[in-house]
Image (cartoon, rainbow, N blue to C red; front, top):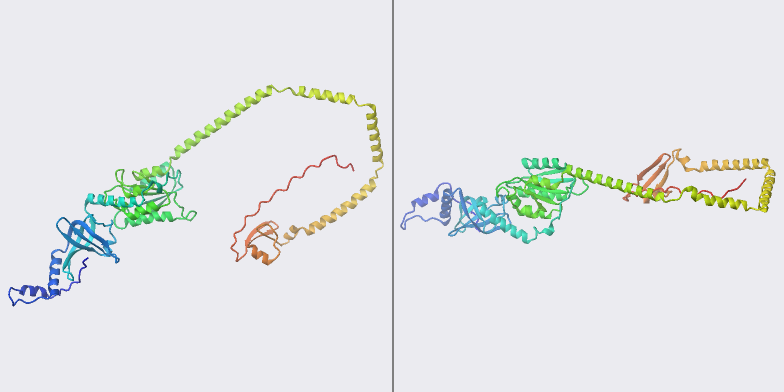
Length: 474
């Protein structure tokens, strides 16, 4: 591919003078090859300093240096072209063979090969038909990779997203329409990632925003969106072309967050629509798809609540009616108790005199033993036991660790509740609990990375079982 050679023509007009002096015949002054090439170069550049050429790309390739080389051709001719790295990096589309384009630049020559070529400043697709051809070629290539397959997409959008990320221009009607529609239906948290939606660098910014939302970690300072909306207003196919770029399509296809594509009007279709989980005909429709109507939810909940209360009341009335019906068939309490009372009376009458005499003797013997009791002896034993019990109480009080805690001491326990008695065990434990008289304080031992263990729940003491039997009489 041709590269322009530096202009070697001198400013003193030597080449022009020599050409003017050249005349047929053997006495004509001889020009060097470089002089002739320089003169041709100057003539070509002066005559074609700024041209716009329409043709079909052929042999398109991008060198490792970033420069773009190709040829423009039609049915009868072909001309080489070159686009330097700075201009080639700002192309709004990916140039490929067979695309009809309009190239704007200047014509120059490359003396090293005696060729002329077009140094292009701007390159644009020639007309909507050429763009549609490029669209279909890119769609077929990305579709063959499976980027548009249904299996890659989410079956449904989150029903009630807490956070919605919006990739669009921060100015204009699109973001206002989305925010207004969300506020009307169901207010939610919205994060706007501002981007260019048209022109140089728009595709790169849109792709970066989508990947940026996808990279937000859950639980961080910035909430991770539950849903992403990629939106832009209507326009021509050239205006919407950023959303047909491969970098945008791949970003949407790789996004792990459910994505709605809302680019243009209902009749506008972009490759972003094929890659997204859901396509919305307009940005406003995307907001309607994103959240339900809060008023309708409240009404539905009220309806369900009324049905639940009504069902509970009906069940209660039916149960009460069945209980009343069953109660009518139960016998009266007096009828149930009467036979038992009669049997008790019969049993009392059947007690013979010997049994009654025996009960009398037991009563008399019990009264005699009770009279033999000496209250003074019981009182002395009571005083002795009370003194012993008081001594044990004072000893218990002196040994109570809580009494020490009230004097400024602290009890050290590990995460499991065991008492720590040495500095080595404290370092190994990592996390400790200091017991003071009025409560506990958790501490972390420096140099230990162990997370503090959750405190064990304190079990309630079991209820004391009631004593059985009559117990002692004295």
